[in-house]
Length: 127
Image 1: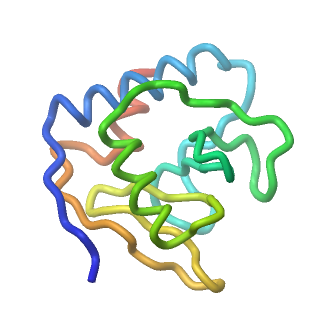
Image 2: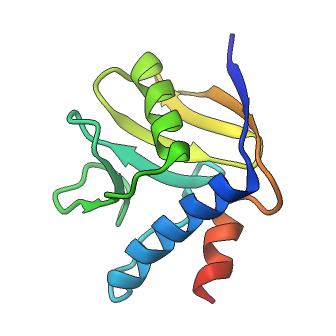
């Protein structure tokens, strides 16, 4: 069973601002703000559970760490630890969080996300 939580507007805004700050610091690098095959904002977790942004598809040698303290990120990390114990990539959508397990998409968290999707909320801060 997939857990379902409510994300408050202030929590969604805090997450978007934190990601926006990282994206502004690395504006000369093409950081992905949407999945290539999967819908949603991609964020990865290494084996150390440090969240980082994706520059390309596949394994990452250079990691753009997200050091922000965010309830959204800690909630996603908790769900990922249950379904992807070694880390991996999550895709954040308006209705929840997805990952790939055994080559299949799997929803690992359901949420009520206020307003625009995570990707659109982040992009609105940048443009």
